[in-house]
Image 1 (cartoon, rainbow, N blue to C red):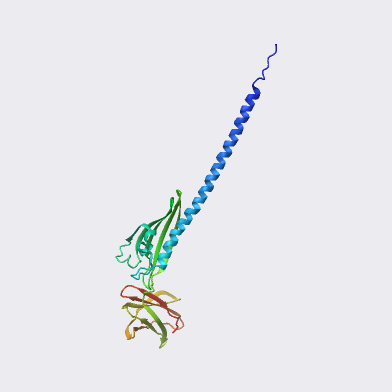
Image 2 (tube, one colour):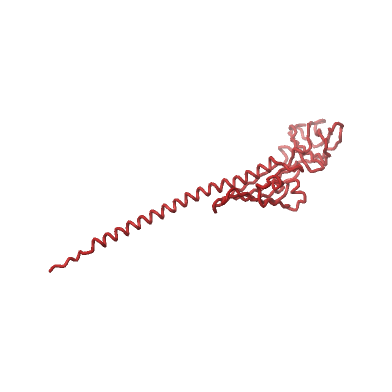
Amino acid sequence: MTTNNQKGVSLIITFFIMLIILAVVLSVSLILYSEVKVIRNIGNSVIAFYLADSGAEKVLYYDRKVMPSTGAIRGICDICNSCGTDCDNCSVAFANGVSDGCTKCTSCHIAFTTSIVQGSSYNVVADVVPISSGQCGISQGNVESYGTYLGTTRAIKLNVTKQAGSALGPDITDKSVYFSGGHVMHIVAYISECARNMDSVTAYISNSQDSNVVTISLTGGNNGNCMSTYANTWNGGISGVTYYVSISAISNSGYCTSVTADPAQP
């Protein structure tokens, strides 16, 4: 009697083949699931990025286009009033201890949230800090906007500078810079003062050969019909050197305007 030791071998081989096929299918499924998840996250990330961009664009719009009625130099500090229900939980606070920083939008801290649809929103935090003085100065706005979509968050950070002048500032209708006597510079500014009183009118004198800036106060008064002439002289001119003059006028309300005069030589 002979014994067949091969019985059941085909069943075992089939079982192992099925295990291999199952392992391959599971591996491919895991890879495909990971790829789908990555693709989905990329889509969410793009949406979150554009949400963050929307928050930054909103701040830039209100900062440059929607000025508060107080005549501030920029509109960012008034965003809670201007934005209305589109800016949830909006708050504005003083920054750097400047008492009128939120009134003139020169120094303040702003935060708000805007919800688009369920699962998507953007949060914005912005600070305005004065970084220079004189010649109307410059203020710097640091804007951080965070867009969130279905748990994915992306951020955009901006540094926005703005000349601290204003359309409500003094109207320097004309200016003149010329030399006489070889080295005496004459500086004249013609200013419309209707509904405004001047706090100061200042000339900043510089040249390409000297890093120092000479500051001269211009004095004058109303000539009638809302027009005023402010002038002064400077005796430091050097023959053959080109001088550059910037004139800044500041009203007693704190609004500022700067103009640059044509270069002049003694």
